[in-house]
Length: 394
Ligand SMILES: *Cc1c(COP(=O)(O)O)cnc(C)c1O
Image (tube, rainbow, N blue to C red):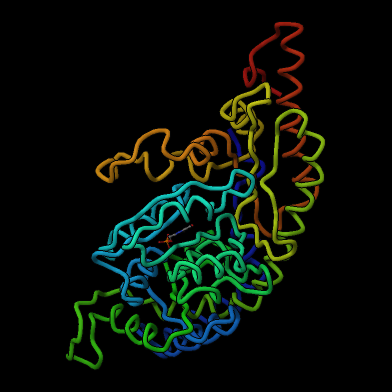
């Protein structure tokens, strides 16, 4: 099956600035400062400044930004950390690698963001921090988070891997908590040409400890004050990211426009059980993903709709099909099916539609038409007992 509308298209992003990117890469080749070089230092300052944080420390991945970042905030053994069950597995892995105990909680089904009431109930005397995951590009309400953290004396550690430059309540992602983890995986809103990540923080001590942890725990060459690791953001990747950063606001703006078009085109399908995830942050949502829910009231299963779109050459995704607590590797944490009903239900209903800067107006209409076609085809099929969905060739 040929792909007519891909889920993500990085070429449309890179083509217009290709010469510029090549120049940046060759600049690093000429300098030869491949590890902890000038472009890294420059990008750390630029990304922290853009995000409203004081310090940035580049690392090898978003996962390392979480794992080492928690350690840099002195969160570890004997500490409990609250996080949502419906996140990418790296959030959970980061907590475990830091040596802390993960405490999962359920989410709000309208937004898929962490349910702070559920979080309140999960607090124990050991609770040290909460990780709000700014899922799909929408921030967890900073105002509510700060109230929550102040009331219970907890640290906020943001997982902002999907939320570069997102805004809500006058805050930017990365400026709410003591620290925030970002990923520059290629398909993230700001992506490198490989893996990459960064910790942002307001705290100079956290920044300094993070800088040691990513560099074998060295405070100066061959002098090790803690047991760190090797996790630096390559100078080459930083040079690419530094070139791309000025375009990020426009790319995010394009994503918002695309999402608004999806919202309005999909609105008539709500009676058929196709529901868009709620945007509660106005123009501050950066739509890393555009996610719909195939509700119980829809005549079709999510799988049938996804199959129909695939047959039409439209790529989709599911973020994420299995919540963290039901992953085989983590059964030892002791959670069970039924523990987080909203997260479990969402995992069965959600579908991520094509979303990237450059996705055109007519492509969006095509995607929506294919969904509409799928749902109404089935409604007709009930009357006429015609062929099953997906079996016809257009
Ligand atoms: C991508 C992502 C990560 C991990 O980032 P990597 O760079 O892939 O290690 C963590 N959390 C969330 C929510 C993500 O989307």
